[in-house]
Amino acid sequence: MISTELPVELDWQDWRSQLKHRITTVEALRHWINLTPAEETAIAQCVGKYRWSITPYYAALMDRDDPTCAIRQQAVPQLDEFRTFAGAEDDPVGDTIYRKTNRVVHKYPDRIILLVTQACAVYCRHCTRKYHTTDVNGTYFEQNEAVSWEPDFAYIEAHPEIRDVLLTGGDPLTYSDEKLEPILARLRQIPHVEIIRIGTRYPVLLPQRITPAFCAMLDRYQPVWLNTHFNHPKEITPEAAAACDRLLRHGVIVQNQTVLLKGINDSLDTMKTLLKDLLKIRVRPYYLYHCDNVTGVSHFATTIAAGREIMRGLQGEITGFAVPQYIITTKLGKIPLTEEWVQANEEGYYLENAYGQTLQLTEHGVST
Image 1 (spheres, helix red, strand yellow):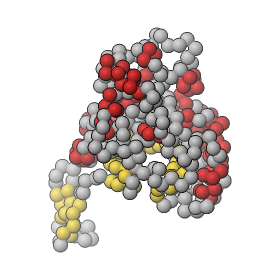
Image 2 (cartoon, rainbow, N blue to C red):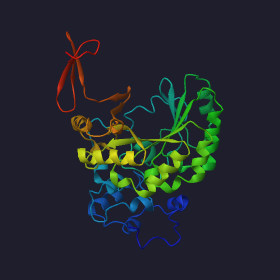
Image 3 (cartoon, rainbow, N blue to C red):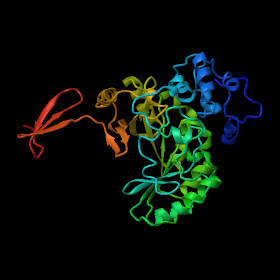
């Protein structure tokens, strides 16, 4: 699976070496896949518009000859990124509307996100913050990434209702342990911050980043939750499983947030396999996000009806806690797109299970 034409100085197990040798040119990418003319044209059109890069680890998961490969579609630029779709926006979820400082986005009453960075190891083609991370001229920062964090911490300190802080980006794990630990330590000095969460795709894109030292560092600032982003069963490799295991053994809870993506995971069989395989590595499915109508991303979006059909197909077919919440993120917040399994009438409640069987209950839950 690993190319025979790897740079001789690449240390496969060293995450820093993987980052240093990310694939950023057509010539380097040809070591891994047979590029189609459309892919080459899309990469050329990215110049001056969109960033792209792929870690050698993630590139090794790509099918050499199949451009519809789930890994290739997530990592290699596509011509559809340059199409215009009705209603597409740079920020359809309203991060910039709710930004209070350079880094703080305060959208929900008791929790905030901290935009740590714009940088990623792999610039996922479906990123909801594509304007912030992937667009060469885009940013959600009011100033820039390098300015002092003190105004951000001061905002959190001044708002005792904030109990949950999510570090996101870009990908926070692009920072070294030495840069991340002072951020965690400073948050732990704020008494009302109960939970620290980290949103990262590194367990998927570069699991070598999840080192024993990193996990031990997180353990010093518990409770810490880590939300990651497996989208396809092919991404659940032995290396990814080992990375998640290291986190779990240090008490870090790992949850998964999948994005529903056309042509990648929008079949019931693929979704079932993904969710069951996540349980095998002790990662709990948390959200299934409907793909946001983001500029440069809209071509990945399914219909809501397709997503609801998948959710209905999951009910009763796999373990209950393997079934994520199907969510769409809007400027009003996250809104469930779930089926209604109960309807009220004058006689009580009318219930239906996943197989269309029905039951009538009284107000007190007695079957009639």
